[in-house]
Amino acid sequence: MRLGLLLWLVGMVGVLVFALLPLPHQLVDRPLRIPLWVIQALGLAQTSLTLAVAVALGTRLAPSVGLRAPAFEALVAWRWPGRALLPQIVPALAGGVLCAAVLLLFARRSPSEIDTVAASAFDPSLLVRVLYGGITEELLLRWGVMTVLLWLLTRLVRGRDATPGRVLVALAVLLSALLFGLGHLPTVVAFGGELTRGVVLHVIGGNTLFGSVVGVLFWRYGLEAAMLAHALAHVFMFAL
Picture 1 (cartoon, rainbow, N blue to C red):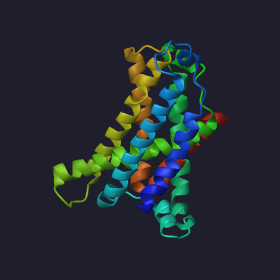
Picture 2: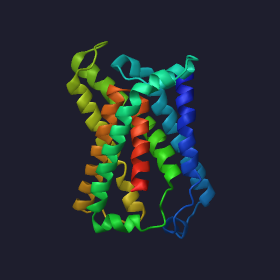
Picture 3: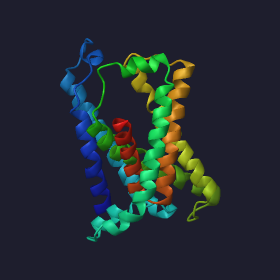
Picture 4: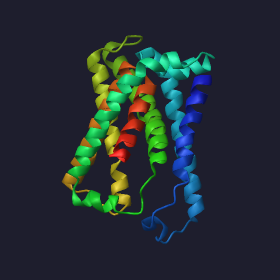
């Protein structure tokens, strides 16, 4: 329970920072039947609940499939987390460089419909990208979705109390990364983009590659490696 509460609180930092973003004019200028503050409050409540469910499922199921959050586990056991975090830093740095390269490659080859979205007023700051993307999204997609997928695949293929093999891990990594890519499509539509075949392939392809890198880091080294790589990718992109 302490681990789950800690992870949820850490993830809520990203949720709150994202909720404080000023809405782009495409949404503000639309006639609404419900007051805007009500919509924002409902969105905040929904994201908070979704995060709580993802964290609870991940915390319950991760140990049975060999997935861990070593530094956070050390914190709730009142141990210094540096020793658990140190082996993850170099892989996270390499992963961050690789993820930034993926983002840069796809940004330079983006369809015109994506450029329409990029040119809108919706441009989250580096802080939002690091906190929401690097922390909250990893809790949702890796700690939550990937863990559940790996647990389900293991039980279906290998039976109760079995440990997952590399093939099942690879499948869980790929499926969670694919869902990560699909989850970005509504943003394109919300901010004026059109879901052409090129747009769909671009958005899903880039985010699936990105999600696969951080998914492997999560499996091999721990949740913190995935978080650091995701956050560093945005930092590197900002610097570039």
